[in-house]
Length: 485
Ligand SMILES: Cc1cc2nc3c(=O)[nH]c(=O)nc-3n(C[C@H](O)[C@H](O)[C@H](O)COP(=O)(O)OP(=O)(O)OC[C@H]3O[C@@H](n4cnc5c(N)ncnc54)[C@H](O)[C@@H]3O)c2cc1C
Image (cartoon, rainbow, N blue to C red; front, top):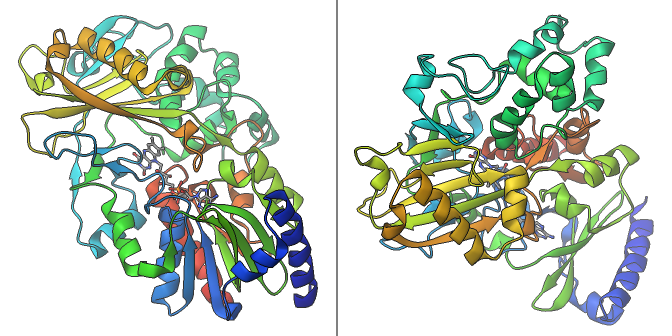
């Protein structure tokens, strides 16, 4: 589309939109800003993907505007500093920084932030049975499921994948039998390769919980690729957290960007042509349109799929926007007067369970006591069920589970806070994962469409992580700097 055509088309879209929102074309034309949009890059979404794109572009001398729906930067990096007592804080979104997270660690270095190692699991509670992690690892006790390997918790699905893994000579040239696994679920393939039903039930509480998905909805091809790369999470993974709170990274990026971030502006429409882009967003109850030379869309596809995009992107891109899978996740932060989990006779401070809370662990290990926060990371069907309850009911359920695991815990109860990401209008899910038939989605998600570039965890090979969001933002910035316009 030529510039004039784009502006005409944009005008028509604007008029249509304006009617839809009960405003007038005149008001919109008035509200349009950006007297000189020739070199401004519009960035939609101020999570780590959008912020890192903006940061790198601004450092390189480009003019940027980040348009963010919330009143804070960081998106799914959300360090809650309220409502906890004793100045404790809690990561209600992204938490762990792995040793391999080079992009994130580079920013930590740049902003002088320390990453402290968190503690590993002390115990496992499955089917009502409790195991000390040490006993389990020493093969003194087996898991109460058929078909498991003694002493191994995560990654034991490998034994059922050996026949398939043996077929991989070049991971970029997979044989047809393996490529076809993209349309089969992890559950289906594990069963076909000899795993008992029981084993699939266990998988729900292992890797499927990390992915926030269900074994019958996850692509088996993705599992095989991950086993081949040896990239799965396991009980020995060295997990760190940023001392003082993960939100320090987005806050540092936001400080540098200053007034180049517009908060409280939910974007409603996106338009693009061959020589310009436009974004229409709510601003204090009014609609405002901003023009730019290029755009980086850095919001989750779970949200983008509900916006108006004119004209539609390529069929492949629209398919990944509409259909890429997002999981289900809730975090429940539970504050107690005493850190009873560290006391003699306790089951420990970090427990993997099949209760509705799934993972439960001491979060405030690097914060001063005596009170402390136990955090639950729960996903899949358990998160969905809890999500149907009110916040108070969620906490009531959690308190009972904790009291059962640490007898008498409830007498130390102070209060809690829950965050269900699937009900958050600006996330509408946990993070992306490879659902059935979605093998090519990440690659498609990242390809630019004319003057529009894409960032966010769902566009990165390190998807579902802060590291991936930053990698994607830096890559989008590079794409723009390389074309020089
Ligand atoms: C519960 C949970 C636990 C996690 N644990 C970890 C972990 O331990 N380690 C790890 O590395 N990662 C973890 N992650 C994943 C990590 O948080 C994400 O991969 C990463 O933060 C995503 O960044 P992003 O920029 O792609 O998206 P987001 O952070 O979602 O940013 C997108 C931004 O777009 C904004 N937006 C949305 N809609 C609009 C709109 N209409 N108009 C304007 N703006 C809009 C949003 O408000 C948001 O700020 C976790 C995520 C969750 C939810």
